[in-house]
Image (cartoon, rainbow, N blue to C red; front, side, top):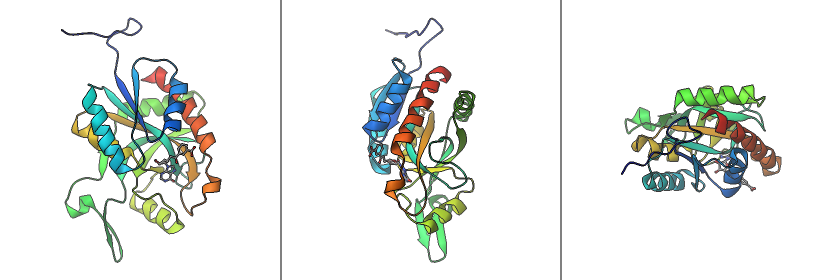
Length: 225
Ligand SMILES: O=C(O)c1cccc(C(=O)CC[C@H]2O[C@@H](n3cnc4c(=O)[nH]cnc43)[C@H](O)[C@@H]2O)c1
């Protein structure tokens, strides 16, 4: 039996999986979205491995039309300031490779696979435009996934040089996106900036501001997806 779900009388409802690393991020997105039956939520856990495993488990449970990866992130200086939003134009596993005596070689360069996953570019652009129209400070740009959160100016500079235009770094996107890609489910990633990437200063993190920005962005998401 084919069951068709209709929403507001305009067609078949999308089924959208929202994945965040931790519960406070999920709660912020839920507050923003309000009650909207198209959206389902799952926690990825912190880090690439947990995110890949949990992404695959969640995506195997149902046929989703879209995965939205959401959460807080570090912002690269001059690219994404604290409290602003970044919609990923590409998701890049920026430290997946080998360290060389004089630099770094990515998995791609080694011929072992790809460190880049494409997002649903049309949706990402549409979301970013809608966020801007709503008066939120949002941009698109590459969002890096790292295994180790950056804690020095030298690493921040190395990552920025490795991925020109990199806007933000977080720790789950590539894992969830890899699972989604395997299953043919389109993905977007939205990050609210809680801290500047560079010398570690946990006291300077503005998690509350970032969660508020994430909530505000999510209230726009419901309109545009
Ligand atoms: O302590 C809290 O209340 C709290 C609330 C929400 C989230 C957190 C986290 O610590 C989440 C960790 C999560 O944040 C991402 N993140 C944020 N900044 C960076 C960064 O500079 N480099 C890498 N990752 C960052 C990351 O995705 C973590 O999973 C705490």
